[in-house]
Length: 406
Image (cartoon, rainbow, N blue to C red; front, side, top):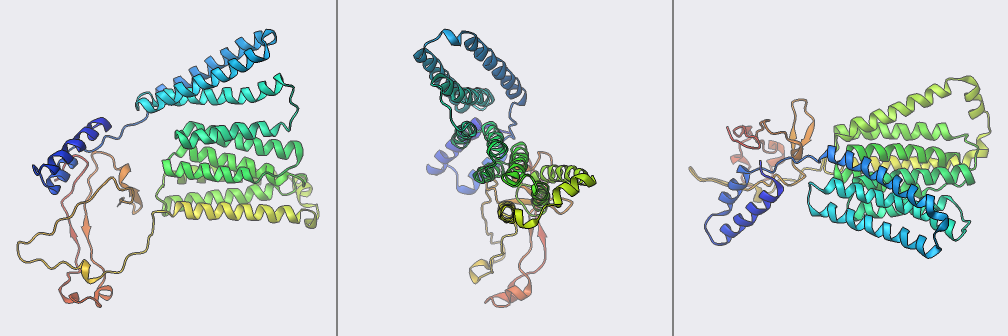
């Protein structure tokens, strides 16, 4: 196994050797296969303790300034706020991009900067006695985390943004009976980010935040009559997305998380509805009174289901291209037809013993695999010029793993 820096150096040297004619492309590929990339795991211990330390330090700084806040001038307060924001975000981004070993530290410092950004919103409002629509503070706070989540990119910032968007939707619905469907759009984008990064934790947080947001949005303006209906629909969509991820998606690890979360909330809602007083209170109202809200939530759930299907089917079950005469290679005895396979291509999958596809990036060292040649069926090849020369049997290669060929 080779580290990322070692692979970078090796690829540079191989390109140099190939350019000078010392080796050909097939030899270059063989050398690359001898040094597969190591599956570098993130330093979770460092990330956890840095996160805890960042929270403790942040609370200490906040308490220090809170104790002396009343004796500071407005300009001193603003200077402290903006200096702290700039210092933490610059330091966090510097560590985050410096090396993979310090990425967790940079992420933690950046999250601390986002916490201070949220505190700064309230502090500036207090300094200038701004009496504004208070849920907007959560919106601007969430937008800041959302921007950093996509620019760094940072999974931790994405989780903070998902939580804040859910809080924003809840505050608008509970305090002002306003349904903010934009929160669902932002949460869908965070779910897309979780899919692209193959982050199970972020997918779970985004799904949970989606349920909270849909529950509060459905209650806005209608006294909560359709909250349980909306939650049941969201849970059903979440469970369906989990099955799609496991069976057809290129991110099967998200399946158990989505199914477990959806089923858990679904059972809790069913348990609450099993009490007759709750059921009578929820469904005794006239459907005409909530028709508009119900239609709105129907479109939201339809969008969520469509997102799940489209997102999780990307890269799976693509239509097979029709064979053409250019695909047929007639070889003379002793003749060889060689081609190169790049395992860094995310579209490569292997078939497990249980028949489920598995991304080539998830192959564990020590497991062995084979390529199996299987041409199109005789019916698909009958239109080809040399159809009678095509062999329709199966031919398997020798077994190979990430570090050897049998």
